[in-house]
Image 1: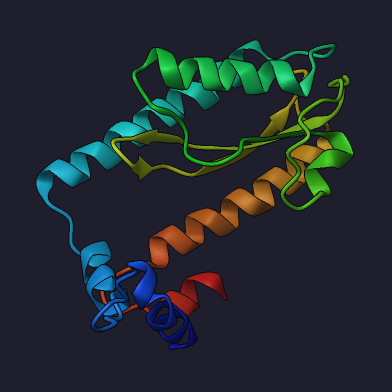
Image 2 (image 1 turned 180 degrees about the vertical axis):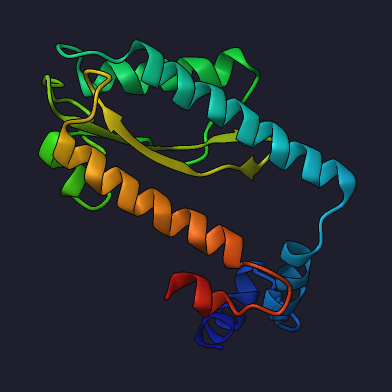
Length: 174
């Protein structure tokens, strides 16, 4: 309301303040809940492009590469497939960088034995995908890394199997 009052004071200078304010949040919420078949197809397309980019990064990454090379490969794959690019800043974090929340420097060397975390999603017609994966830079988990991977995977599988109509959103996170 302070903004409208400030605009009204500038009316003599030709500024026209809005006549009314409308909270669009309830309408936008409804639009987010229901998708047309065309919107679902765009979401699937964004997810397919993102899947291809992550798979390509897993195939090509090796010790000695730099995080920025993997980042560039992901962006290249997004655009090669017709995406408008990344839906958000890619996170390509090797070794200890993976523990930095929202790490986006993406400029360090990848070492043998490190894990690489990639959080990257493409955008297609303004529909975003969002995928995070962690894998070994050298292609093989150490025994400790494999144990953690298996525990996380078991948790994910149990959660997916437990989802059904009527199951609360909170249950999934707990």
